[in-house]
Image 1 (cartoon, chains in turn red, orange):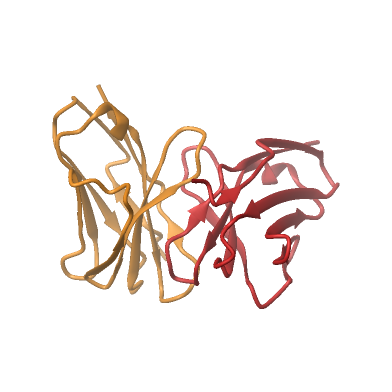
Image 2 (cartoon, one colour):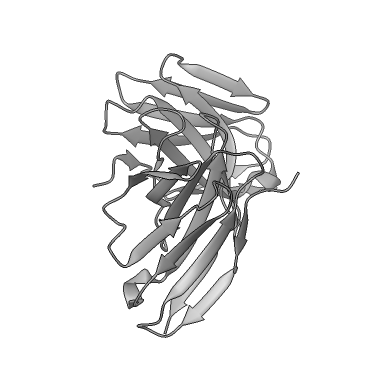
Length: 112
Length: 112
């Protein structure tokens, strides 16, 4: 039972443009959300998180938006760079510090 | 600042054999988590420890799996009587309290 869904397996964006990665969840009890980035042969690397009391969190080129009523979050990367090419995982948990539920990931390719 | 360390990086074994993996978390992180990732999927939660106490186990953790964190520092994950379906990447993560989880690079298990 996939409680976190990333419906786009892949995304291709030109360098300098905005990348938007989407994530939907089904469990209304989730209140902590994270994005991880993964390169081949490496473990996931934490990017950015947001708690349910906020609707936006920004860190440099990365912004996460949360729409609780729609059970939807998105990650915006502006401007996109070739080094951003990786698999991005959305994750959610009942509270920070608890087990994470991951989506299947979206493979982002940023082309020069 | 060393990250989460996992050993070995790769393990090839015959079906029916026992295997043990080790995870060394980031120093002073009191929480330690184990996940499993198969091809095309996101990481799936297996179990987590707070200090030496195992606080949660997923239903994915069959009775052939056992995890320990004897002194609240490193952890081991043992799989007894391995099966083909155990082939996966086993990921360890650690966190300090409610901070985001930081992952190691994983142990890739291949069952012949």
